[in-house]
Image 1 (cartoon, one colour):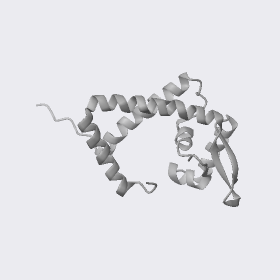
Image 2 (cartoon, one colour):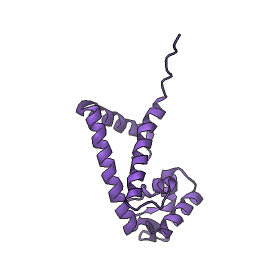
Image 3 (cartoon, helix red, strand yellow):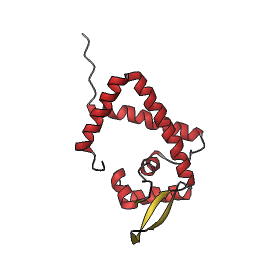
Length: 147
C-alpha cells in the first residue's frame, strides 16, 4: 500500500521559490565580488528605500529587534554597502542609505531577479503567471502592512 505524499502547506509553497530566488541572487552577487555580507544583512539592505530609511523602520520591516538591525547596519557600513546620514525631517534621527557599493550590488540583484522572474514566467505561461501575480498582489491587502 502506498501513501499519498503529504502536500506542503501554502506558506511552504510560497517560501520555496522565494528561497530559490534569494539563493540565486546571493550566488550571482558572490560571483560578482559582493561576497562579504550575510543573508540577514541582505534582507535588511533590500528594505532600504531610495531616500534612505530609519533604523527603526528597517528593524520593523525585517522583523528583527532594533539592536539586531543596528548590528547588521554597522556591519554593512564597515564593508561599504550603506552609510548613515542625518534625517532632513528630524535633526535627532539618522537615515540608512545605500552607499555606492550597495547601489552596485542592488543593480546586480535586480538583474538576477528579472532573469528569474522571466524564467518563471516562461515556465508558467503568460496566463498562469498573471494569475499568480494577481493572486499574490491581492493577498498583500491582508498580509502586508507596508503595501
